[in-house]
Length: 370
Ligand SMILES: NC(=O)c1ccc[n+]([C@@H]2O[C@H](COP(=O)([O-])OP(=O)(O)OC[C@H]3O[C@@H](n4cnc5c(N)ncnc54)[C@H](O)[C@@H]3O)[C@@H](O)[C@H]2O)c1
View 1 (cartoon, rainbow, N blue to C red):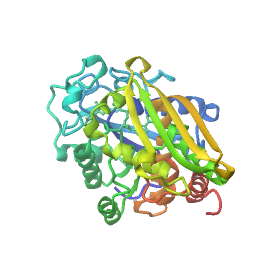
View 2 (view 1 turned 180 degrees about the vertical axis):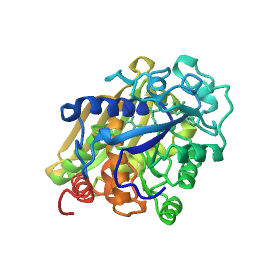
View 3 (view 1 turned 90 degrees about the vertical axis):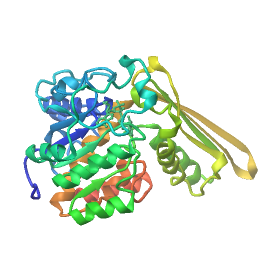
């Protein structure tokens, strides 16, 4: 498609789970509330508001979501995130059945259906049919919200997006924007890509980074740290399968390592999803501990417990990233969008500390000097 300069940002979602639910709710919520919407990171960015996003297609594998309008599908089990906006009759784009690939692991297939994925009996669309669907819907951006460990499925949807001329926002820790081979493909296609793996609005990563930065700034020698995360949604259940976790751990650990003046030895840093507690549902609890030394080696330690509703925390970044994808196109940019990705993602192509990343994002969007 040609470079869009106006109109709503026509967006397709791959993986209509809890994060997608919060994203869809956020668009309808912001449309209804306008400037009174609560907790929006950038109410206006480069002249764009969250309500300028329009969901035009969804792809999933779950029989409880496939064939439904996206506004209905996002409220279907096993989605369990808080419903902060239930007036979703304006969200009429259909959810279509994509191929399972490695999106649904053997581990998830063996869990009770009410808390896991249940692949639909309907035949999956082929690659060409997905490209056709994206093209027919005049899709500008594809956002990826697939389960952790879906290497093939993420690459499949990224490939479809390239073929259909869509920008990509990659919310998950399968590396695209930060993978030079994929970055090159998007650059050559003249399409922006933002990623990888959302750094949630007020999540464990950004709080942990801030704490580490504070210690460094005050001259504290950091000796060791951990960040243990528990939650009760399908994301956490899926991450009980340790074989799928490698890139999630890498993404989360690197996000903290790069925030410190001196990298810690591998044995002194442990960060990742730690357990699945079903009754927490979409609530996530993070325990962060940092141990270090003050003047003369005097010991110090800090323990922090953060509790958040997991999916709105990612959707807050999604409604920013999708607008950044439009801004990048308006500016004729292609390939990884470094200046916007550092603030929004845990594993961007280039890491900056958070205040600098914030300034770069604003400058990229035309809100002041770089
Ligand atoms: N919540 C956060 O703050 C946060 C932050 C960063 C990254 N993420 C990542 O975002 C992703 C989405 O998280 P979530 O909580 O929405 O997960 P989820 O389990 O609720 O949703 C995943 C969805 O993908 C679908 N799916 C599985 N295989 C598929 C395939 N082959 N094709 C299409 N759809 C398929 C599932 O049916 C489900 O609807 C996860 O990888 C998560 O780690 C979340």
